[in-house]
Length: 273
Image 1 (cartoon, one colour):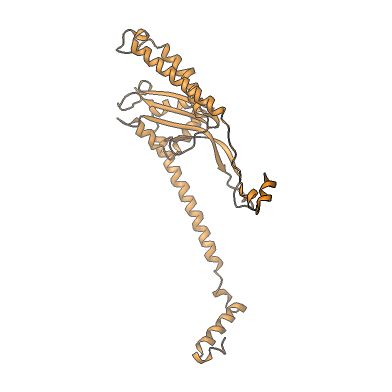
Image 2 (cartoon, helix red, strand yellow; image 1 turned 180 degrees about the vertical axis):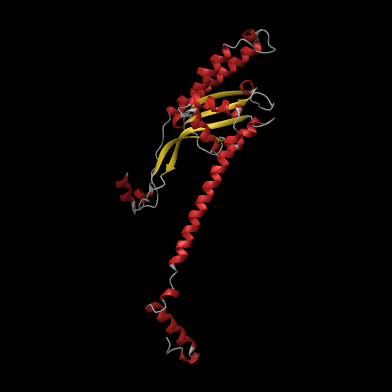
């Protein structure tokens, strides 16, 4: 190369010599990164993680300081409904990034519902090693978390709080203004969970209701009877839908290309048939 381009001057020769010198090792330190730089990068990364952990801890303590009688009511209901104690529930909700939804639920004319999912979530071990295909070993673990109900798949238990008015929720009125309920949708069977919740909990409660507010006749009132009939009919529709889904025939997708790609003439088609 130097001979071919010698007419361009000595610059190329000088550069070739420098490159050769770097490759043979005499100037190796100018080619490889210094180990001190790598160590500095590692230290900075460690410091960043510590800072993030510090900020997360500060946020948790700030939320814990906001806990009052309203939060205690929610925590107690959740602990009653799932296999966690009140301290565990408190620690979970103050660690949840959607904690602000609770405050929005308490606010005047705030959110009409507050949802919690309690279900298996894939958790990656901190020391998990990569598989040959590049994936990691993820283990399902029960987790309670706040949700809007529109982004996560629902496969477990839903605990919900519903407001009965637009009034601000206080520690003194939370038990009157907020209704609590749960329904189980294990394995994602939402229709069955809703059917059980309505037929076994809500309808019996409605039919045993004595006070219907301004309706003095109570269960004898024609509008109340029509309402209960409509709810019964809706549950029957859910039941029919569930049975139709359970009895459905699932067609397996078949790759027919593998069977027909080598068919060349009529005799091949006859043989395949």
